[in-house]
Amino acid sequence: MQYSTAQFRKGLKIEIDGEPFTIVDFQHVKPGKGGAFVRTKMKSLISGNVLDKTFRSGEKVDVPNLEERKMSFLYQDDSGYWFMDTETYEQMNLTEDHVEDAIGFLKENVEVNILFHNGSPIGIELPMFMELAVVQTDPGVRGNTASGGSKPAKLETGITVQVPLFINEGDVLKIDTRTKAYIERVS
Image 1 (cartoon, one colour):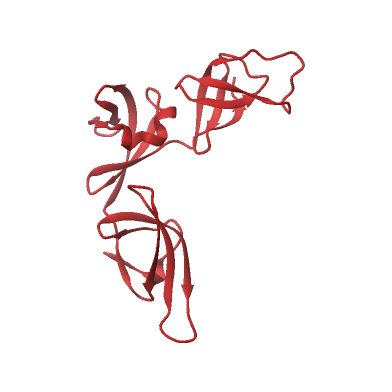
Image 2: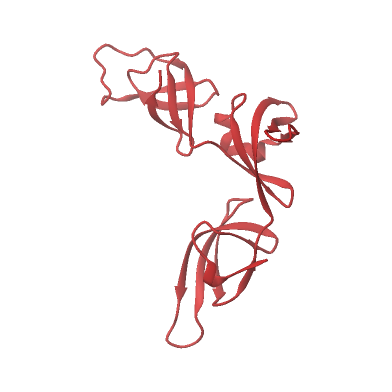
């Protein structure tokens, strides 16, 4: 199966030279002279590199063989990070390269989506928000308000985020996994 340049849209996943890309931006251009073309900006789903490429209008590109599977994080050991498919209960070991961006959010039983290209894992997608407990932070000072300053807090998974001054150890916080930003206190 193939996509025509007329089907291009933001977020569309295409394959160039055997590598899967997602279209970040595109623009149809019709110059006064010559044929129309489509200028695209694409991001590699494997390396994360951004590539600018121009296609002739009507040119066709391949559809990548991508599959997304819901998996549950089990544990980490010397050989890597272990996940279990929530439907087949098959276990899989991923290296640090595969889970690089997610390391600070992986805790037991958290469900993630793992993206596969031609049967090989290429990426991991966390839930947009996660609830994590604060394990270490300086004590809050009396009189501090929600609009005051901020302080670092270490969470149960090991990452450190900036939180308002009134947050204490033991509090459970809602964290945005894309920006590693504090959203609100849950408990």
